[in-house]
Image (cartoon, rainbow, N blue to C red):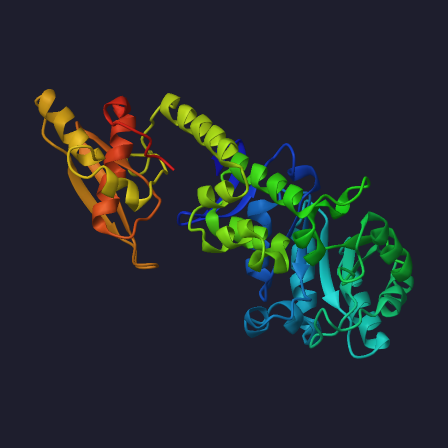
Length: 387
């Protein structure tokens, strides 16, 4: 779905954003990589996303247990027939380039045979990681075996597995030359040192984290992903740097931003989103008749403003003033995670947030806040509430 406030395209499962794309800055050069073990489901994802990305890649190299146990990633290296079905189905359905990423097999001959089979499916490029399925970053990356694949295929070969030797921008080209590849795929190093792509040289750890948090604030990134990336950049410093320890103990994005002197940036974008929300025209969902505004607030804010200052109390007073019935709350218990959503019904309208809450009380309070916004009565509620 398209979000007017952020100017992004969001792919959502229930209320969780699993993919957020800036169509202007990212879409023209974004390659979406998926894990799959099923041709039909892979094609379904392709059809949903291919208008929003530049290319589509199948990961056949991930050796982690969650991927292997699901028949995805490196598990596919031993299933060439299934791989052929997946890649052929994707190529037939695609309007954008299709590629895949593999690992080297037990022998160079096996790797080349598998890579040529992939090539025969009509893919546009192939990534080759120079370690075998059971090897990990501490093992040597077989650059020479990647080179053999590059020499044997007609399509571009993308070298992978060199994060351990890449220390600066110039090392990227050295790795490419060592493998004879057309280009390079970097994962771990890009997480720990995002500025690895700067020709001018690496930034400091602090600069990398501050730059990342600026994007977090601008695009309203979730807490889990934010903390994960900051900890990857910190590495061992999270145990010794005071800001690192604060990050480890954090429970919200704002707390992480405070640790890294990014509170002003956080508040700046937060207020901009709220201004946009307050100006928006509340149009009921055509299927449910509900006006949705996906907002929330921390439970501690309710504790601080308990009693007459809560959204429900303020909404009740408004209804009393205009001699209308107080709102009726309809609760929805989500079976998937045990959390709650609520719908506030009053004045012939329905209001709700699709952000789930830990209990019924919080769900009703958030729905009341949405109602105050939708009825243009938000100014009756003192203080800042929305997150």
